[in-house]
Image 1 (cartoon, rainbow, N blue to C red):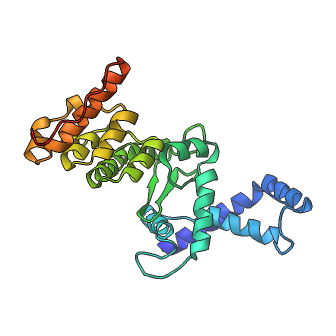
Image 2: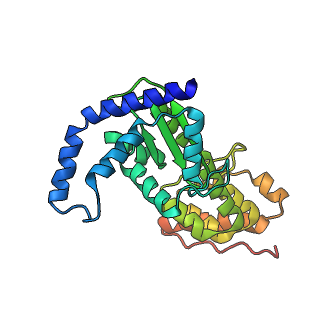
Image 3: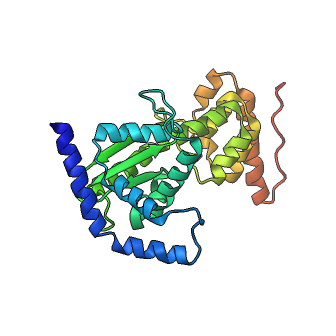
Length: 269
């Protein structure tokens, strides 16, 4: 019985869209007349497939499975079947990225950096490639025709996602990976942000004795060595890093005052 009701609702939506799709037909035939489509493209069949896709009814559970399949490169995580080719998934995600959220697509991309597709029914399908896929539903729409609660959920998720960025920065500082740290800095990441324990990249680099990373952070990012916990670094046995960083800070300060720079402290003393 539920299956029959679902089919009836599907057919009703499909017939309704066929009556309201005149403008899309006109634009498609105009583009075809201007040779914008390959000769092998059947415009009528393509539009009919589009209407069927627009009329398809899904639940949040089945929609999440679809999103997860897109996030998994076309491989359904529930059945293990390759239902879409990687090339088709790549094209679909690209279109979702640039036009999935109607006129709000560019701003949405800037704020969240994830592909998404909205519906006038209040559905938002979100894909985080290689990580997860999800679907949320809230029927109240904003001025762009998107579910405003769904959009807000994605933007809040992006804010919480900054924690992963901080961990990447701290991991690069821990390893002494100056190349990655410089890339994070140039991409706009806050390399002076702190973790749950109040430790920043400069703190971690000094604790591990990575002098080049310390110099980079102090000279380019405005990191302040004075605010770090010297006690912790002494406990880790990196006195040389502390002395080198302090000498660098004093040398830079003396250059600004036209005073002869101090030499690095002698470890033998």
